[in-house]
Image (tube, rainbow, N blue to C red):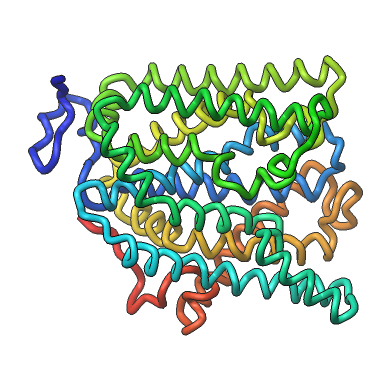
Amino acid sequence: MTTTAPVGNSPAPPAAAGTLPPPPTRGHLDQVDLFRVLTFAAVVAVHATAFTNPSDSQAANALGFLLHFTREAFFVLTGFVLVYAQKDRSLQPAQFWRRRFRLIGIPYLTWSVLYWGYGLLMAPRPAGRAASDLFWAVVGGHAEYHLYFLMVSMQVYLVFPVLLWALRRTRHRPWLVLGSVTALQLVLVGWLHASAGGAVPTGWYARYAYVLLPSYLLWVVAGGLLALHLPVAQGFAHRHPRLLVGLGAAAVAASLGWYVRDLLLGQSSVDTAASAVLQPIMVLESAGAVILLAVVGMRWAQARERHPRLRRALLWCSSASFGVYLIHPLILDVLLRNGLHGPDPTLVPQPWASVVAWLLTLAGSVAVVAVIRRTPASLPLTGRSRPAREPAARA
């Protein structure tokens, strides 16, 4: 199979006059920085909107539906980064697990205890019940509503040596692998959606699906396949950006149309019905959103040298984004308790309360993380070791 995309360390073909060069496929990938930052910003927007509006607000839940691609995008990014780092290397499982579990396990335990303690401060409970709550929160990944992501990520790390082996063995059949995993994903989330709606009996897996890896396996595999075939994928995207934007936009628009259809058929807009994350239509919506994010990231990577200051800022934000993710529910809760709580906020009316909550949560989280990163508490609180100096963009 021939392609015009650069492979390995071979030089890229010269760009046509008036066009941007293709983004790099080796070394630091600037497109990943923008993808990560935009996804984290969307996560904060989901939570800011959800907690400043009534739970049955159709407009707020429609926005939440559109932005709930973030879970899937996170796991695409996880699969991509892991495979990209290891695809040309021999993986040593023990060394891999030791490093990865240190970077995510320590923050998971730290923040589980901190959010448990914060909840205990806000609503005191008897000591025996509080200790039991902490145990089950750590085991189940629900000390706070966003920590499930770390629990699922640890499951990804646990099976990654087998996953990498399987992807390498099937690297010449990417479409067969992607199609097979997509079919399995649709069957699983279809059953989960039916379970949530009462159409079929609810089982153990349905109750804990949000914190279990199989619910997101498609996206981890998709990210891994993209990393294995990055030169080909970027070559295609470089030649056909408008096609990809059209496909991504069409997928998102069709998904929103399905959401409206559900409402017209009488489904509730709350999370267990029309706007549920684990349902078949979200596979289409998330795929469209991920395609659009990837194209935007690619265009940024092509133009990065024109904007060195923005590149440095994005690199810093990317490195700090995990810390922002960990702390932002605490910042948001403080804001909600001081005038931004819906549906009738005392300081800011809707729809501005959602916007203000989003901006202040982002700004406050970034500011706190910037301070923490300069202290010995950087690793347990942000998942990143204390830097000797602020990260600088690499050429």
